[in-house]
Length: 190
Ligand code: FNR
Image (cartoon, rainbow, N blue to C red; front, side, top):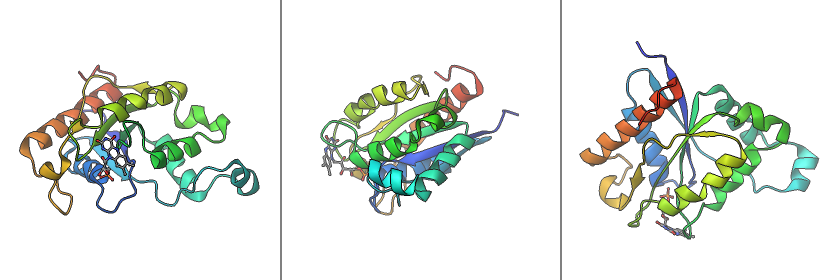
């Protein structure tokens, strides 16, 4: 029996009908035995403002997400792509999660991380996924590069209510989560 693995699946979109949130939910559904993917979103996190931080400290929604990530075995980021780069809400969330700097070690350092993303466009969030690399390097995370999952033409593979209906993508998604879990357990997961 494989060691149980807990992954936080963070969607980078606040949108009710978000494809990236649907992607994280599909991961929770399709994760194999001994792997759990727990969906998380950025709701309730304000725009970063150093004055707000100084006056009121770290917002409750940020603290809660920090603790969930710190307690997990790995972080799966499902990123939208905006203007060929990272979306502001998700960058803002990660920036908040990196405060105060003394907590970066506990929350991020050496934590396995995988990046995926979904878009109605043709290029599967390839630019956004690459644009995250300097951030995860700065936070000293442990990226998994053994697999790639880029969902293009999302409207064709998700049903209106957000179920991943495309059999080929379901298989690829299950393999992606499985590969990341193997990496977390200490294998190379490729
Ligand atoms: C987009 N979108 C987009 N898509 C893409 O593949 N490449 C891009 O560069 C952009 N740029 C972009 C900029 C802005 C400001 C918006 C609002 C949107 C489309 C984007 O992929 C689409 O809105 C997705 O549905 C966003 O992800 P969620 O909300 O479905 O998870």
